[in-house]
Image 1 (cartoon, rainbow, N blue to C red):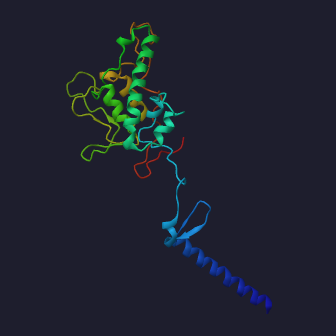
Image 2: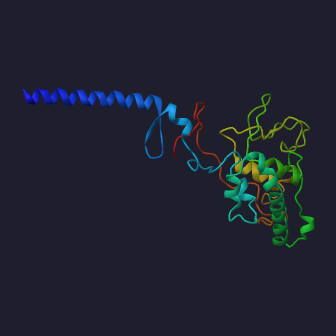
Length: 238
């Protein structure tokens, strides 16, 4: 008899715990220490220090490629990642532009040329260095409701000049990101490709079989995965 009573009491207690647990889970919020709080008490909760901005990831690699020495900051990349977008341009555009122009000076010296002859050249979008770094310094993705979503689509060769990278009026750029977009290559083309998109692409200028110019318009890594057409638009592991 005692055994049966103990069984009933134990079953009752477990059932009550289950009911209480479900109610708290539905109406409360888990805190860092796993303490569940009712909605009525949420107004008094201090969330300071709970969350930290790690990365925006709107345009991967920009704050790494154009990182510069910034007074008071051990890492511009880290500083950029924790800055709100509305303050990014004022804080980082000038440094990004200086680093972009410095890259061209470095490559000029490497090639034995006068840095004045190897300045940044307006890119395939017609953007000068100041405009480009202004656009890229704010790590957000713009949306164009009346245009395709893409990081860059070169369009077609409307003037039949043999190049689809030269702006002809039907190219679309920086209107978001498509899963198949090669973000890093597009960024490098915008940095170093010049007006034709291939200014520094490892050209063999004297036809001796050796590259005379550095290959700066691609990281050499292409997309190999098959991207799904449904959310979350991921490719199968390889």
